Image (cartoon, rainbow, N blue to C red; front, side, top):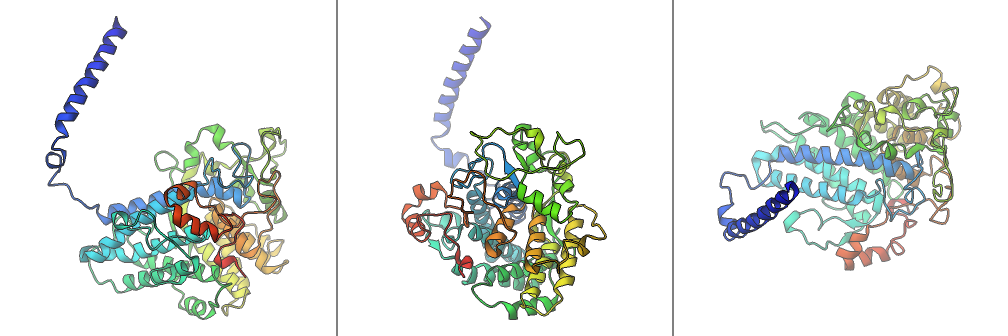
Length: 484
């Protein structure tokens, strides 16, 4: 009887709600418009949302999928992506909607800043964020919808794909937006503070340093296509870039929900899916690098706190793996995520870029000093003590190929930003990644992400043109800056 009464109550409620809905929706637009509710979202709320959402989601993406592509970690199961079937994202592996959502929201901030003098202070940060996110997007995918893609209701739903070269070098492109963003900040004379800024707490000088470091990164990245030396030397001599860890473009995760690192919220089985890669293990052990104990845990079956990695890309259906034989991700990624940052740009990345520029002869500077500063800052960033002998031993810049040392150290520090490590491998060939165990890409390491399936379905004509330029959307077709 109790269940029967419950059923009658549910049916009655459904009938009543349907009747009320029909009655209430006849004049829905007139009745339900709140004259006191603002039509547009305030830019400070959007800025906070864009920074947090992009940083949180791409940190997760960078750890799960990026760390597989960059061979920091190996996936034990759900590992089609680790086997380089990049069209089958599983636990991560789909950055396209994350980046586009935040680029569109950021475009709303920029439009508000340009249309309303009250919001003028937001122009610089929104241009710099646009350049930052657009760079991540095009470096992953190559040619992408850009100029027609971010304008919300005003945009075409089937935007054309723009060439990566144009996205970098064209008007309103990456480098142009960085320059315009810096100019907007330097010329700002208003008294309204920048609110919603969880990177620099409203410090406009911090945004300028971030922009200059980002410009350095962009110029180095496209250095195979044009000579950046004049601009780089001027940038270096001016000295107004992120130079200290206290100036990093980051925001902190917490130990507890809702703002902890997402890996801490995964069920334990999903978290335990990621173990130390054999590539990462060998590099860290060869360098006698104590950060292995920060990034990973000794494997459970070890009787002397040893670490053990697994070659990427196993065939989980054919290979039996004992989890206790391999090193899981460290406590910093689950139990102690308050030690983690969402990392946009740092002093160590900036100094590694300067060290590379000096080593390549693009600037006049001491590459060893810049490299040593970068390594020291990277250890401090990851909360690991730098051994006194580290920079005099296998990790010394003079020990082997200097460029390989620089990029390898930057690759190590980019743990959690694994896409960055993979991008730098594609650009430089360092560190030397391995042929994976059971490749689904003919033993070839991919050099771009594929356009997602929804593009083929929803933007077919433009997708077909872009696919034709990438050998049918091949993950082995290099992007513009990767063509020597």
